[in-house]
Structures are given as structure tokens and as C-alpha cells.
Amino acid sequence: MKSLFLNGLWAAAFLAGTAACNSNPDSVKDAQAVNEKKIEAGTPDSTSAGSDLKDAREYDTEFMTKAASGGMLEVQLGQAVAKNAVSPQAKDIANRMVTDHTKANDELKALAAKMNVTLPTTLGNDAQSTYKDVTEKKGVAMDKEYVSKMESDHKDDIKAYEEASTKAASPELRAFAAKTLPTLREHLTMIEKDKPAIEALK
Figure 1 (cartoon, one colour):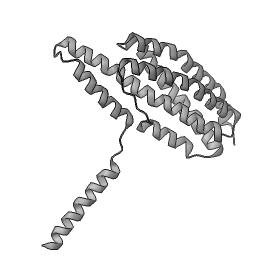
Figure 2 (cartoon, one colour):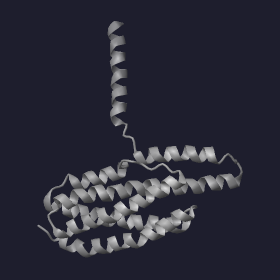
Figure 3 (cartoon, one colour):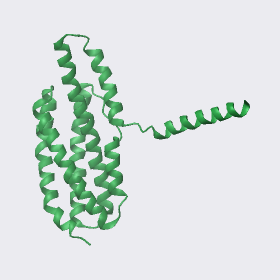
């Protein structure tokens, strides 16, 4: 009986430890959960109008939390690549990302404070994965991975910002998205222009 009891305790401890190891909090989801509580508290109306308002606010805050994580990724990854890249093209792209996204991040933070929206302060899981995929590689391989990730990320960002520029409930958020779009498009043009030279590296 004693050994069965001890085995049971060991199994419970093992499962608890496994669960703890597998739990990987996502800063974006955590921030959005905080925002959803704020929205719930601010929209007590259970009518369809209240439901529509809640959905609109959730769209805005979800866009902002994802944009914050993505913006932090552009800066942090840009800093790492600017320091370690082999090609001047990759360094140029990285430095441009740091400069432009630092500015956009600051604008988003100011807007979030005004709208009482909680933003993540660390990279979300998707952004962490991208950062790891690039920085684990060395030399030319890192340059190539970086430009590939930046191309796909900016294509996704442009779609998201285009949608937010017309769909966001907040006029100020629509304006922020519209203002940021030209910069994102310039980034994509730069990336696509330099990508062939980077991919040709050996």
C-alpha cells in the first residue's frame, strides 16, 4: 500500500511538473485577456448594440496587442541582425527596421495609453519563434533567413494594417494604421529589392 501511495504521489508530481514545463505563457494573449476584462466592465449593455460595441473594441485591442509584439520583434531582431549580419544589404534592412519600428512602437504605446489598452511588454510566442529561427542561424544562413522572414512578415503586416485602417472602431487607431502603411510598403519594397543579392550569397 505504501509503495502504491508513493507511486501515486510521484505520478502526480511528474504530471504537475510536465504541465509546468509545457505551459508557455503568451504575452499577446495575456494582454488581450486583460483588455477583454476592461471591455466587459465597460460594456454592461447586453443588447445587440452593446454586443457590437464589445466586438469592435475587441478587434481594436487585438490588433494593437499583435502590432505591439510585431513591432518589438522588428526592433529586437533588427538590432541582432545589424550586429551579426554578413551582407551590407541585411545590415541596411535591419537598421531601417530598428529606426522606423522604434518610432511606430512609441506612437502605438502613446495611443494605447490614451485608449486604456494594455499592450504586451515582451515578445509574443509567434514573435519569439521568429526571433529564434533567425538568430540561431549564423553567417550567410542568418542573412537569408532574416530577409525571408521579413518579407513574409511585412506582407502579413500590410494586410493587417490595411484592414485596421478601415475597420478599426477607434478613429485614432484607423489613422495610426493608415499612417504606418506607407512605411511598411517601403520596407517590403526594400526587402524585395535586396533579397536576390542576399540569397545569392554563399
